[in-house]
Image 1 (spheres, one colour):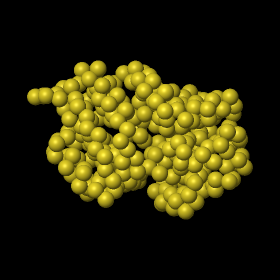
Image 2 (tube, one colour):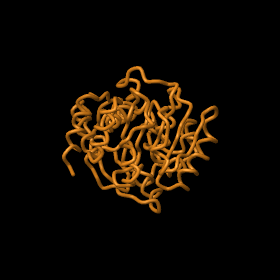
Image 3 (cartoon, helix red, strand yellow):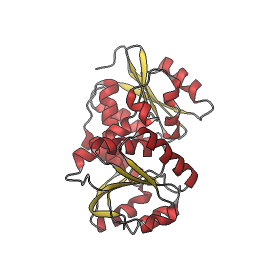
Image 4 (cartoon, rainbow, N blue to C red):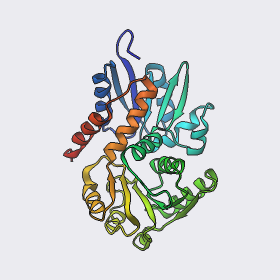
Length: 285
């Protein structure tokens, strides 16, 4: 697919003003021969619906960032069954004259794990730190890959418990348990996968307790979805105890590859794009 009559226009709607990732993605699309331009639209929950409606009039595709992903599925009656379960969407995909909410982090996580990780143990549990939009995508991706036991911790006990109650209603045959933050260090070594979805600084106490990695099975997988280099030391500790470390920039690269292919029919060079993401965020703080 190529631009006709000028560059194809797309946008990201987010509460965050950081344009690095969308600009890199726009450049990667151009490197692949797809003329495009991107706009970063800052929004907030109170104005989100109006911002989306306005953006749909001038852009061909939309991405959604942060916790605004929770709001997107409610804007349309046309909701894929996967989003009915997930309840969060990070893109509004235009197909013909209709717009559909989609979640590409879910798909990117699956691609990252299947492609980058070899021989992970499906019999183990999954530990997820955080209970926001990215946590929902992580549950969906790993449940689809075959994991059936999830332990979830969150700095806010009430939010974490509500998350557990909600996902229990959506995933049949899957076990979910909430773990209070102060009990993280007491978790047994039964987890094949551990994922951090918290933003840097959201709960530094919890991250410091992760350094023990007592909860991770030998040869388990450590995923930190943040692109911020703040948690690199934590990744180093995970590697030191024998974990396979999948950096956030690789998950982001696979996520953007899936979106680009669906939205524009463009196949990105995932290795080149992942390297660009790593370099852009490595020394930016």
